[in-house]
Each structure stands twice: as C-alpha cells, then as structure tokens.
Image 1 (cartoon, rainbow, N blue to C red):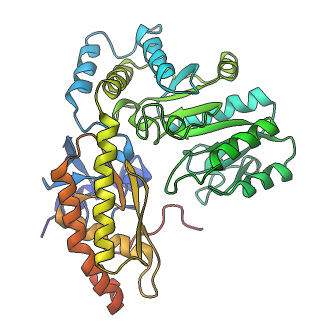
Image 2 (cartoon, rainbow, N blue to C red):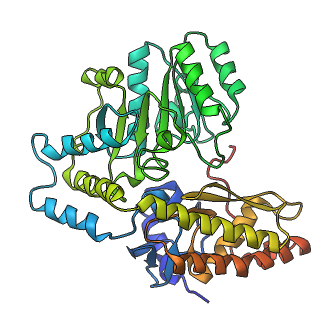
Image 3 (cartoon, helix red, strand yellow):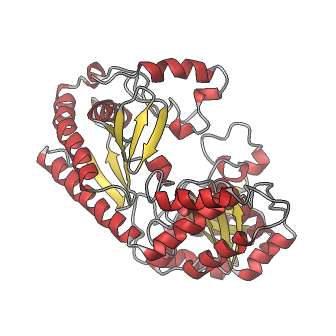
Length: 428
C-alpha cells in the first residue's frame, strides 16, 4: 500500500499560509482525494513524477496539458540556461520577443501580429478587450472554459466576487449547436463584440459547426476568437484552426507553447491587433526572457521533429486500449472515451448507486496505488512511450472489474477510503 503521510502532513502546513494550499484549483485538495492521493510533487522527468513521499508515477495530467515534450526536456532547459547568462528581464525589449512572434506568425494561420502574456487567462482577456475596442460593442458569447478573469468566470457557478453588471455581458452557448449561438445574437442585436470558443474539447466539431460560427460572426460583424490555450501546438503545429481549416480573427495560446514555462500569446488579424497600440495590455513580465527562450526552443522542436504525430499515435493507442477494456468489462453504458488523441477524456455516466464523482474518486484512489497520476483525462506528451501506455492500460485493467462489481453491489462508498470529490464548478 502506497503511503501519503508526507503529502497529508504538508497540506496542513501549506493551508496555514495558502488558501487550499495550492495556487491552482485543479491542483488542490478539491480535485485530489485526501488520504489516497499525492498532494505535493517534488520533481518530474520525462513522463514521470515523484511525490514528496518518494512515490513514482506515470503522469497523464502533464501539468494541465502545459507539458507537450516532457518534464525537464534537455533542449528546452538548455535554451533557458543559455539565456540565463544574458538576463531574465531587461529594461528594454529583447530581440527574442520579435523572433518568437515571427515564428508563431509563420506557424499559425490567423497570426499576423502577436503580444505575449504569462497565463492563458491573460491572452483570452486580451482578445476580448481588443475585440470590444475594435467593434465598439460590449457583449460576448462564450463556449468552453476561458480562464479566471471577471468577463468569463462571472458566467459560471464560480462567479463569487464578480459584479452583476459584468456578468450580464457574457452569454454562454452550446458546442455543436449553432441555434444556441443564433439566439444570443437575436436577443442582443448589434451588441455582440466577440464569439469565443474552444475549437474542440470533449467532442469533435460536427460537420459545418466551426464554419457556421465563422459565417455568423461575419454576418453579424462580431470578432471570432478561438481559445487555443490547450489545442494550440498540441492538435497541430498551427493549432486546431489549422487542423480543422477554419481561421478565426483572433486566437489565444498558452500552456504547451513553451513546454510548461509561463508564457501565453494573443495573435490575430493585423487590423484588430493594432488596437493594442491604444488598448492597455501591458505586463512587467510580458517580455520575460527565460520563458521566451523556452518558447523559441519548443516551437523549433515542433517543426524539427515529429512531436505531434507521435503524441497523436500514442493517444490513439490509449483510446483503443481503454475502449477495448471498457467493452470487455461490459461498461459501455457507464464509461466512454472521447476527445482528441492528444487530450482525451474518460466520460463517466451517473449510475443509480454510484455518481460519476464517486466513480472518479474510486478510480483515482486505485490509479494512485498503481503508480498512475490522473483524474480521467489522458494528456499525452512526446515523452510518453509504450511503457507509459502499458502502465495506464494495466491500471485500467485492474480498476474496471472492480468498478463493475462495485456498481452491481451498490457499495461504492464502502470501497472509498476517503470522501468523494465534488465538481469544481459546483452549483452554489
């Protein structure tokens, strides 16, 4: 039995000075069942991480998809070390800012100009601000997750602290449902500045959906924004827009742009991006050089090596293996696997005697004992290979018969050695 004594003890120390003991909700005890999970990691290498109890795991979270190459990639870290000798941040722009911007413009279909931030939320907020400036409108239509800032998070159940006036400007629509987007425009004529969506998340775009969103924006004079914080430099070198052949007016990038180093980007049409000469989008650390050196090296490696082709093939092997085990255990009505091979999801359906979150908690409890770090997604990096896939498939092979027996017996709570998780975006 794996021991998590140090993790559990350190949580008390961390929570004395940090709300939830973590800087990120999805890394906190709200998402990792206490007592059966590692709560703090000490180091990572390739596709593996070690917790502070010195347990080793194959990591299928990949730091929320920000790791595309692998932890401590020598090419990326080497570029950072080289830049360190020249400074971390300087009093004027450094040449590497333009070099990385040029590289992104060459790779991404919509990109004619680029501005850098540090988090994906910086980039999505920047897209919305300049779309509002460009159109002279205030309302926004959203689909997907777009970060922590007021303009978006106010439209979710995590809206505490967001003014009602701000919340009233954001309207959600359903993926693959053009009618739900049309209704927003009909109810807010001449008021929609931008439509922002993740071009793909769990579901693949239905035929004509992304094209239809593009057509609606053109007809209504709204700016189309693709939030490619995850899909960018993961689905294709040019992002989901290159994969699906639909070009937005603006796009935000983050996470894997620099293999985990903190940098994000607003990109898009020159005439809209020029709004940034007047719109205030400015960061002391927006031109931080170590992250830009990492981005430059990461993008070069994506162009030089078959990174995304290998990631996609590895992800296909995962999807095929998990689906086969789900069918073998007669769980097709309970579990399904969806998403892109580089970022796929195990979808759980509530059962009469077991909720999806109880099943997820049990899965994490058992996976962590098997040495697999995950919470129901398969976030693939270049460093995941046959051994890592085999470890994941073996964890499923051990867990799925147990899940079936538990559902049939109706005793899932008895199998849990912890409290079950609750949704991050729970209804208040």
